[in-house]
Image (cartoon, rainbow, N blue to C red):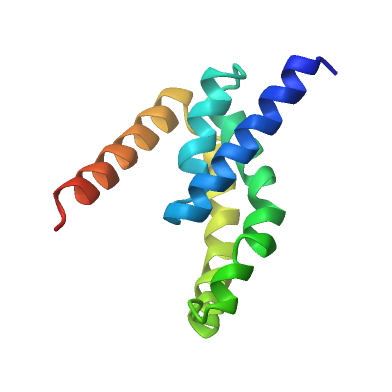
Amino acid sequence: MNPLYVFGGLTLGVAAGILSGIIGIGGGILLIPALMYAFGQSQLKAQGTSLAILLLPVGIFAVIPYYRDGQVDIRLAALVAAGFCIGGWFGGSWAQHLPAVVLRRGFATLLLIVAAKLFFTK
């Protein structure tokens, strides 16, 4: 494996982990554009890779400090996670049949809406 590829991947992981841990955003918002532009992945491949990346670190390691501080609602997390499993399966299946431009524009629109809400909320 190319050393630059390894270094770039580890650097992206550390940066995304730090930002996700500090501000609580989903790593996908950071990872998907980085995977597309820095690693040349398609939107669909970046989405799949992002999900694989986030499986263990978000599922276990990132939540531990919040749990220790009493900042996790376990019951709500379990309910949302159950729904997320169902929705994730459907969403992942449907994404395989959407044109790349639809995925890219949908993701960009979501980012703009979230950014505007964060920017204009007091």
